[in-house]
Length: 323
Image (cartoon, rainbow, N blue to C red; front, side, top):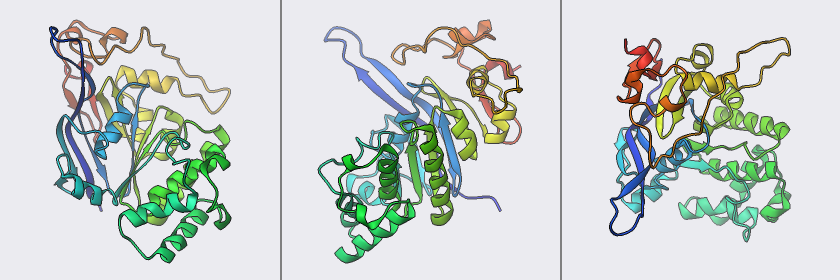
């Protein structure tokens, strides 16, 4: 049985205007530029790429924490890209987010009791006593205890704070959770614990994740499908197994070549990208990756590549596959 689409993103754009003064033409930072993908119910969909590629902005725009410049965001076939504030506020009960920094995302002036019961209060769920019971239940599920309720965020380790952030997102029992680099600020040993917790919660609460990360070794472990972003655009999208076994785009190949191998005898050709990521305020003409691409052709410098459909739902945006 094929899972039904939970979220459909079509031609999503998020531009930021750059103020250059009164007499200069307007310019825009194209943080997200014509991004389209579908997330199916029950799956973990990965968004990967270097810092500054637009993956976090995409995640925040999906929740309307950033207002989209253009495009549509369909949640269960309903366009939420221009939903009025009050309706969007109610919808956020079903779409939650886990932020990258587990300390900055928790109010330092509030106890864990207040942090966890506030979402239930805002959405007018349960009585006051029931809210506390729900908070205790979710704390125990994420590996903490009732006696943590009256502590403040600064009294916890980074891993514990991220567990609290996850608990806050899950307590409303949403359908979709956007996780923005949820383990990048944690020690490696704690990362595995948090990843296993996310997998456990997904199974227990039938959750759907959008997992944003720059760490492909983590993405390989947790995701079902992956979209690779570069300079605000998706350059390749495929199932996780297909992407790692048969990458098509030169940028994807370079990213995968940088993933540490699991065995000392295993050999892998390392692809070193030259140059820096261009500014999204002044992207290159043609293919945005062509200044750093070892397989660049003349057409890459003048024409933007189309999205090419490969086998098994594998898509790649590259002139190498348009012949």
